[in-house]
Length: 500
Image (cartoon, rainbow, N blue to C red; front, side, top):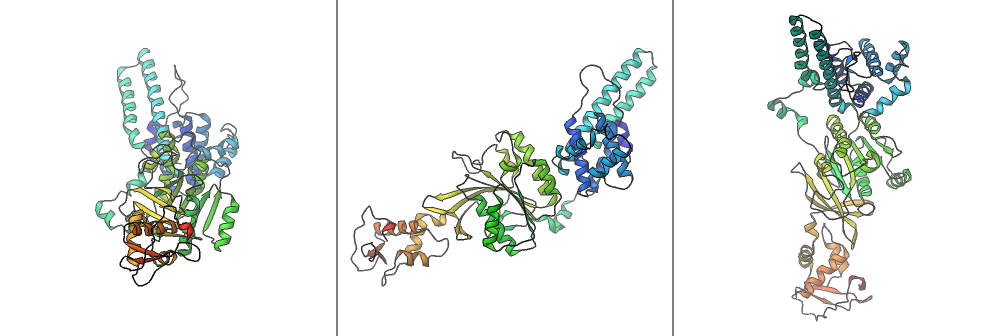
């Protein structure tokens, strides 16, 4: 890594021992920067590697072992190679400083010290900031010693000016590890409108657009073991791959492998573009690194708790720390990401029922609450969404029918009054119809048998429909339009759909 002129201002050695407390330093940020550079190299991200090379020097690192590692990275980069784990470790060994750098195991551990390339700029900024503070502290000490030892005032002023120059250049140097390349990516409004990739596109989810799309994070939350998040999303992914077999999908699943084997076998879905990663305790940063290195169109993380292992979901800073890197990865790779989570046990306003901090919903582009419609409709789910986009349906009812998911439309379309009106339109005066026949003739959203019976009972009690029969096996009710002259049987309270 060739040292840039700007980096020379602040890239001084930290060999001087400063008096008082420990000099400003963040060893975790230094580890994250070194790990981020190696990850960038492994992913072939030459812009990130070059950006770090233009900003950093070995002297920016407080820990001696980190200075050795970055020096090796510079040597690798100067030779025209990318400083990945293997080449950096080999260079340290060849220059006989591998032990001083902490050994091969320590260098390897740096890969787990970062969330990935996307967070490299912010960690680099911390390292550069603390480096400047140490430089200023050293300079202040040198000024004190010089003034105390009779140095000419002209020399002291010149030295102070050099320190001021270093401070003025720090903001530019430390802004991002990709600053120089990003300057070329700034777009005018005209260029943005002319860019066909700027318009949002959508993948169909349960037959609907507006929920999942490239570059977006979609949050889907439901009650554990009740809402059927995993099953519903599995079917949606199956349908997406059937429609577009070339679509590259990765599923991070908390479910046993056998569950997915059973699904794939039942669906006869042998799809090379569909990949799986099952929960095995691998750290969240390592998983994000794996995702970062794959060519993907869609990622499903099921669930956030199983993979991110956030210690306190009500702590906004912890949630942001875990999820923000996934958001940045989603943007940069232009991949569609679905993240499943859980709902609070207690009811909450729409958009606020997701468990933990509200920061999670704020990070998502589309946040969906999935709930069981009712105990009488175990295969139905009502989805309610908050979204940045007008295309997103704010409410949708879906139903599991066999191995398929059917979108039934807005929940209001399957309410009792709506169903009653639709049923009344089907009734005839010249021919009685059974409940099953009526339900069969209803278009989607098709109500449940229980909802159909409630609608018929409502029409009968309001004098809008007649019926014949005893409502027992062998003599079921037949339902007629209200102008029928057939005799009517009073409705008994104990009657239910189970008698038909």
